[in-house]
Length: 141
Length: 188
Image 1: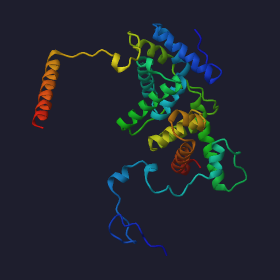
Image 2: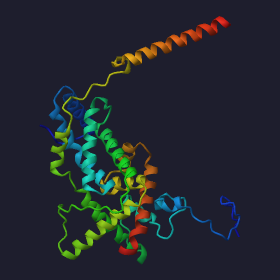
Image 3: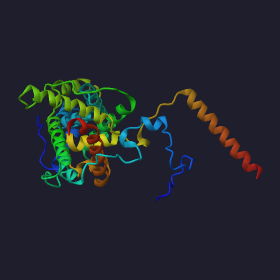
Image 4: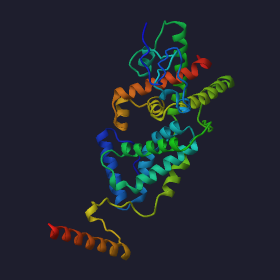
């Protein structure tokens, strides 16, 4: 018999299930830490769908049904793969493009900056204060 | 105006760089070549991720406008760069919106099915698949859409997403596992 080593809930009670938090219940199915149970897609089907193996044949009824399901999903995927952008969208994008041309990327030291007089005065005052503070500290030493 | 996709990746890179140079020199209309060349796979990605044609169109439009504004910053492949803009747009949309039901309402694509029963069955599967896809975490949904809907190879996906083939296989397998769990009771 295996010991229950999961004591994260603090109960230490192997027979009692920890109540699930609301946040856990709202998580998407596949984001949960526990593995999905019951209907694991077989390695054979994954290899077939990945184009790395042949379509599974001569298998049990469960696998045959899974193969049939994936064949239907593939038909639907194939239909979606043929979808094209609606014709009006391309013209719509061109019409929505800004009239000004895209700017060439300049390195930061070549870019111009705009500073208002208030900001410039505040920066100057800050620098004077900093200089005075450094000067004072040097004189004290 | 040349709109076909060049043969090799190197040709493609050079052809795209040429168009980008033309746009930056003032030929705004040359940008339409890039839109024509890459909009279809990007639209399919946005549609697969959001499940809504209207949202997919909006994301595509915003992404191309952003790409135009920052065109001078393109380094390397334009298609990979603009894909990242679209992919981020989709993820932002998924983060910001909570929707209870989404489906592919437009049905003007040729179906290839002949009988009404088959058509009904197909429409139902389509709707159920959309609902099931919406339950997946964005990273799994993205991997599934790129693999199955866009038909990309794992190597191409790894290149575009900046991750490993092994990690992407894991995401696709987990997405399949989750989708199968949700759909097999009804369809298998």
